[in-house]
Length: 487
Image (cartoon, rainbow, N blue to C red; front, side, top):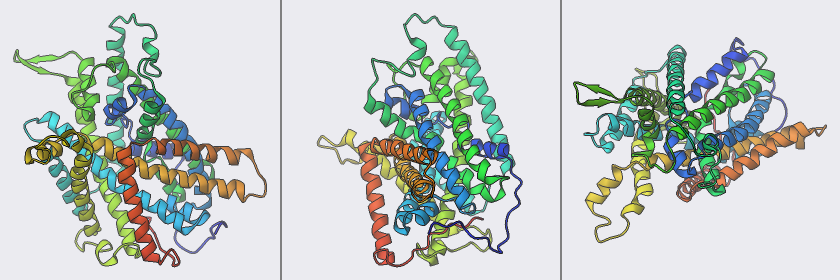
């Protein structure tokens, strides 16, 4: 099915969103502090070169954003990679894309749980990380079960607050960097290229994780029915959002690497950015002996708030996706399509996502951390198991697995745009060929460079999903409805 969607008598939303409204929405969804939470993981994987990796990822997202914008023209009310791929390629390919989206939705609250636990442990080190993981998973679930949601106005206020913190960071960084002499040749260029630590494998491995910085930009396409001139503004807003976030994120990574050389390890890669901020601002002595690092506390608290809000939003988003799949019989309808009569939320789906986030946080910690304890006579001892569960490696693996699914969806959208606007078009234009082609191959290169554990666990997820789809549709001979409600 490749024709233009036909108009129907269904009620439509008012077209009131301008181009600026769409860009602001995209920036709020992605967050102006996007790379700070994952900076330590990126720096460790790429041996520095975080700014370069973020800019390369921006190029991939720009090409993919063009494809999203074009597909939103054809399906202005869908806003879904699943729909684009199912309609333009094949329903089976659409199902695979949809299943990869489920991985994204499920992993997002998981990694937010892990990150919040790590940062809370920095504020209250007496409480083990594993207890913080349980705490945040339970809090996210309880709040979402009660139907609590954040308004767009509050989100905008949070974005403004985070923007103010970013300004403070840049001022403090300039003060610190230019206040210390630097005689090393190429000092200001090393965040982009340092010959002593550079490798193509490290750079592309870092870039494959840096895609996480842009996750959420595709959400702009879901506003097609409310946007003024959507055929123009959706694609333009998507591209401009990627540029704004890319440049801002690269600048945040750039100043971090100038302030903290790659030769010096972090005490915890998950909270590396607040640790760097502690170096940029003078320490304060309280009562003569208590030492505070105000900027580190400010940034840590800001990121904790941002990830808390993101974790809550990601959980209800995942629950909505599972609810839609259950309502469409793609998953057991009696469980996933249940709606709480009092709070009018998909209660079972929320509980399922909360349980999966908590279980997954510990499971990924076992997968990522067991190698450190895999040898010796007490490899399977309770003490080693507790050390693993109290570790800090699950965030990096979870982020790569999230990108495993996201990059599959991005590749699918690029292929769908290529088929619709070039292969099947009567007039072959280079403008319709190169963006989706480059977007596909760059995303493929980043996907291939994900870590081996992420590829293994992600492949297991995809195989399980495809097997379920084959069983559900009798070898994809029957139509499988995979629908997510718009409201």
